[in-house]
Length: 189
Image 1 (cartoon, rainbow, N blue to C red):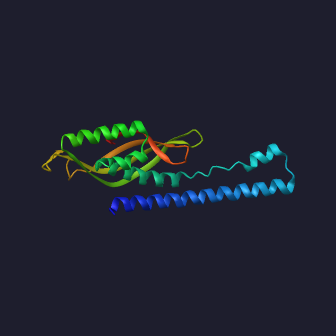
Image 2 (cartoon, rainbow, N blue to C red; image 1 turned 30 degrees about the vertical axis):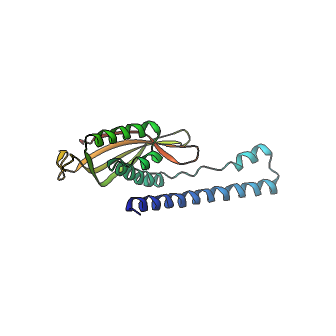
């Protein structure tokens, strides 16, 4: 099994574990509210509001997962791994990424990508009861586009670029997150 798939499995396991913990907290809250309703004879209208699970949101946990997704998606894009991209991207973003991958492949080019570090990740906007979140990543990367002989066409292995990427994550109905918009530019600050 390749290291990328092992890494993907570890990340999925970690995210599943975190989700299980959040669900367990919600289940405990609902059970406590239900017991309070039965014991105190609370009116049905108030009981309904008490039983609704509360959304547990933690910006730092979300950003930690977003950084992992940023690295996985960027690496999958550079390595032309369309299958991996398909499960992490909204259809319109996936189509854009695949078009660029296909263009590279048709020209027999490859992209060498190294994410040196993510200097910062911050939430710019949360919308729709935290079902859509826009994150800005400032990262240091080395990107080199090479021809079929391995000669650099663009980029320099000795030049680390500071990039500013803005990605919007959307929560699907099954509670998984996908990237539904991306914007990338060199950071000249």
